Image (cartoon, rainbow, N blue to C red; front, side, top):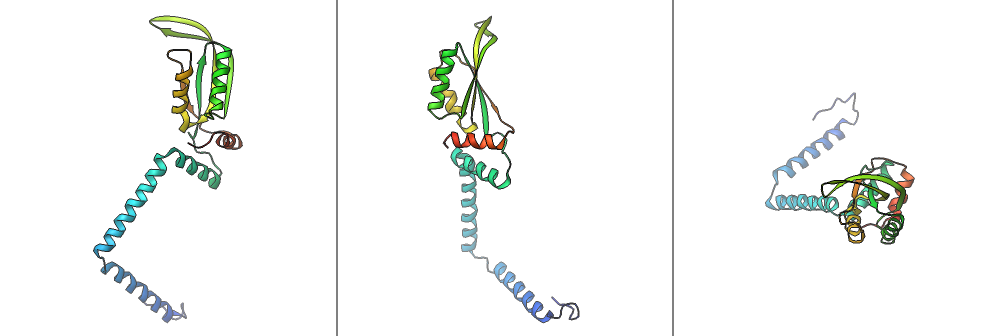
Length: 183
């Protein structure tokens, strides 16, 4: 590569540096050995395994989400969820809510009193007064919440529905992360 000596008074140095870089690139490309291919393949597979393990492991995913939030100052939609549960009475709702909290499966449980419910059961329309529970948790904990609720709920087929949180107060969502231990 040639440089104009007027525009580039150090053109000789630049030309030598450019020539060395070209020589180094040619040398690297010309000396492709089986060892280089194997090393490159091992590095690629290792990186893919690392990415997959972070994506597949809820605990690592949670750490990744927290890092992203800390770096960007933004919320990752879907990291938290709200689970809706029904309960036949206030005492059952309080017992289930306390049990969920003691197991550290949620950051918070709200109990809404006396909701009127209509539903089909065994082919018939039923009317009932129930208590609705809002369980605020990490999305990675939904299956644990569901399994636990099914094991303690008085209904044979309890309502357990989850909805991802798309956005919210970053301070509150951070508090939720601190209140619920990682998986």
